[in-house]
Length: 154
Image 1 (cartoon, rainbow, N blue to C red):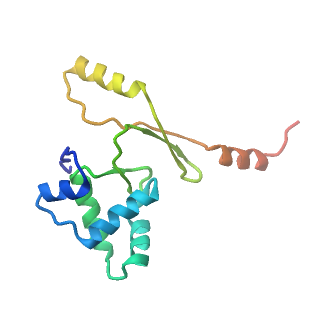
Image 2: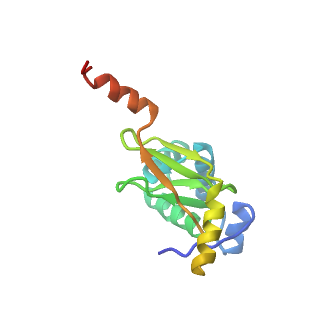
Image 3: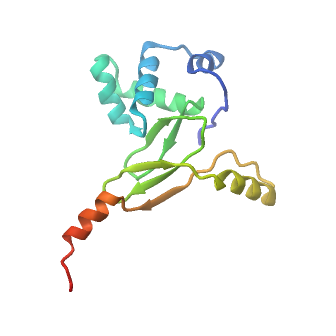
């Protein structure tokens, strides 16, 4: 398990404090992650990065994603068994809805999450550092497609 370092500040400040340089590749990868506005896997990030810097390698992408995760700059999610998805760590806690058909991911705020975390932590004398709620189902588009493909039984 990777030990995540909880730090505040800009990416450059966090990298500096951990004796890591802010390289051209790291700058590009962080910018692409920010621009993605959501959840991107390493392969997609690599494809986007290659369009802007043809010399970047897939191993550089993976290595830096692990560094960013360790430094608390990005979050890694396991929405399915095939891919790890990454997003820039935001200041606001949010949870995820995942469509089992198309893989669509929707973020939502769960106000009871903080209270729940505090109550459970107090009850079991546990310092809870993160909560991940993932609800799985069908998005409206997939439900509509499914209902159209079902024969009318009337």
